[in-house]
Amino acid sequence: MSQEKVTVRGLRDVAAADSKLSFVDPKGLLYYLGYNIDNLVENVIYAEVAYLLVHQRLPKKQELEDFRSQLFLEMNLPEPIIESIKNSPKNAHPMSILRTEVSHLAEFDPDGNEFSPDANLRRATRLIAKVPTIVATLYRSRLNRSTPEPKKEFDFAKNFLYMFKGEEPDDNETRVIHRFMILHADHGFNASTFAARVTASTNSDIYSAVTSAIGTLKGPLHGGASEKVMDMLDDINLEEEVEEYIDGLLEQNKKIMGFGHRMYKAQDPRTKHLRGIVEDFCHQDRTSDLYNKCISIENIVYERKKIYPNVDFYAAVAMDALGVPKDFFPLFFASSRISGWVAHILEQYDDAVLLRPASNYIGELGRVFVPINQR
Ligand code: SDX
Image (cartoon, rainbow, N blue to C red; front, side, top):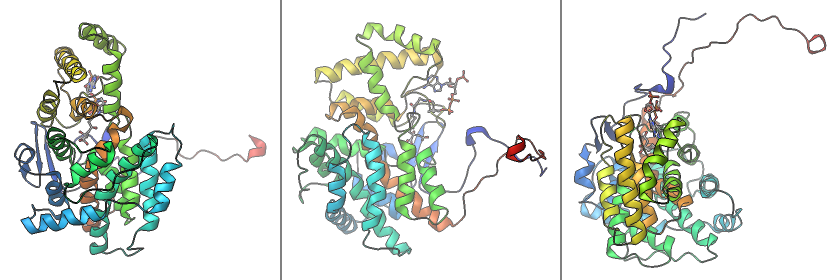
């Protein structure tokens, strides 16, 4: 037997590689390329963050204008993709359709099989624009409505919300979608990003790597949590019932969706911003009611388990306030995280090392083979 390897269940606290893209500080801080998100979220637009992640620096004014123009030109889909979305089963989870259509997009990539830094950078920009376009097109097709063409005068994030809802977002909604997408853009080696990097580490194509990421994000322990948060909030009729409801889940050893985090030992730094976004919508009765339930849940879960809300908790109410149906919550997460995913894929291509851990074999050895007709 080869020498014993260290088995770290869940790879907890294992650094699988070096990365410059984002630092998740367990003390409750998050940096994108060294910029604290608290300084970014109020001062830049989402396109600047996407540029920052992909090019590893903030853009100059003209560079940002050029990038926004590229994104605008890429907010379209090949006709066969649109047809495939329209013909997709209405009862399939939207994340399944997103996963399929990103994979399908690979067949129409203008750069074909070229595997060069320039071609991959073009694909990265293409995907940052096309993933939200697929999300908007899918939602509109489920409403049996057309998807509006993006408007040149709108910024990328505003165009995404416009194409999704079919009406011009107001100033508050525009501020919210920018902040929402900035806060969701990147987050170290979270499971979906790591899945993308494992795929990219074999020099597989960027579409395969993003497809791996989408399939991983879909899980309720990761990006699928926000939809489960809304299920929980809809399940609790009155704020007064919160304590009994939460205690019931904990007695069954169930996880409270939207709480806890592998990395943070303090508050998730994104939570205060997302809670603030929800507060901006509390003039809406439903949002105010959901917000009050959230505050009660937050207090009770901390009292019982000393754990905090993660990004998915208030994000769920923010998306609800924007009029997004809960089965599309993980797709809004993906519409932003695509910029982090492609940035990590490009970084992994540069790192050029196969991500292939060992495993601690605990099965039997030396079993005697018996042919099937003697078993
Ligand atoms: C995201 O990694 C990222 O960066 C992800 C993300 C990103 O931006 O990409 O931040 C986005 O995915 C956020 C997480 C969304 N998922 C959920 O909200 C699902 C609920 N959360 C849990 O399943 C859990 O907190 C995880 C999966 C997020 C983290 O799991 P860990 O690190 O494996 O922690 P654990 O399950 O071992 O829990 C440690 C302790 C346990 O208590 P004990 O059994 O030791 O007494 O904390 C408890 C757990 O029971 N605990 C919870 C809990 N989360 C942890 N108890 C109740 N409810 C919870 N949600």
